[in-house]
Image 1 (tube, rainbow, N blue to C red):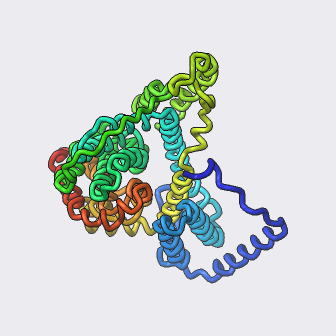
Image 2 (spheres, one colour):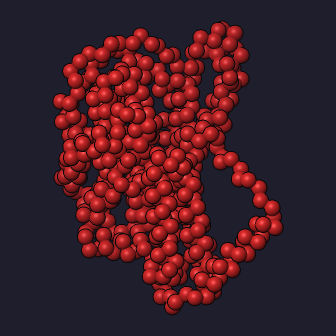
Image 3 (cartoon, one colour):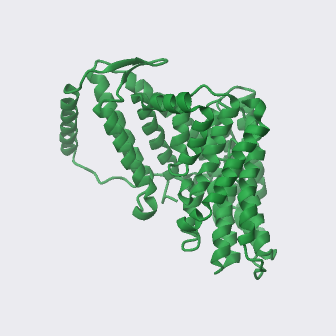
Length: 488
């Protein structure tokens, strides 16, 4: 988690130094612009564009994005937050594009394209911010700690706990994000498994697969499903057609990994963690917020983010109530359930949102949007969806998301907007969501668990089970194409 809602301020520079640096950069870019070869014109749906796919700016943009994403993938080793390289890459890519357009007398096209990308980002960012705020509020009210303590003190066997944590991860991740869900279930596994590395490793793999599979059949389960829903490619209820394929994706590898779990009984723990005052009501308000977002989108034809922001006001008003009544409850006695040592403050929950992820998302949207504006996504769409066919392309998207984060992959597909049936849009939603389970670095849940269970859940430990996970991946695709054949 970042230290606060905003990055620390940069070291100040003298104004004269800033002006000189800007002039040097402008002069250097102007020199490059004067040396540009002839450009081919391409007409978009609403803007006149230049085809820069064979221009030095296009090649440079690809190289910059590749370097930035290499740094993102190496975050675990470099300790460099993933948002930093992609934000820089986004600015440089669009600056190069703008220089070319301005030098050709086109002063508004790049600006209009950037504003379009910013609007898409703003909707998704605000939606995710509300969801993260609710999750942080439930975490502060000890909802997840109470669930964890309940699971630990029940005295389940290793095999029972393997299935229980997997099933809970599958059903919690459609509402909470898969990262929070995976961390919660991993905490249970580590508390019970102790030094049993074999159990912890296999159980963590199962949790990653289950959390990613559960997030695939809900518009709220993953950023990629949210993107598809807000883009209008699939209706809210249409995602639930992926429930059975998602179950298959989770159950097939879990059934095989079951036999690798030691058939032993761990020692029970009597720890009890009571929830704080208002915890259950906040859960109810979160469900009401989701219903509000769905209602605004389905019945009023407004963007879902308007409903989510309206739902944030529910939490704000309830937080005001908790703050005003804290003294009354303190007089009864602060037993962990009633009074509060520190009054509830909703803005603290906003500040604790995963700002690095939100800003990383900004960088990805702008980078991929820039590559699309250059013309590369059109070429990729022609190759994948026109030549390979939609099914092969969508399956490849899932495999690619195991190596590259599924956010830029899905945003690229949505930017291409290939002509596909609802069944194919559901297929790419499924593959992008569950394809990240093939490798431990393929999803945020896997990367987080490698840090949480360091030394017990590792990249190579996960890789050993990749063929089994791939079997579930293939089975879920087959079941979707058979079970939802009428949607193709």
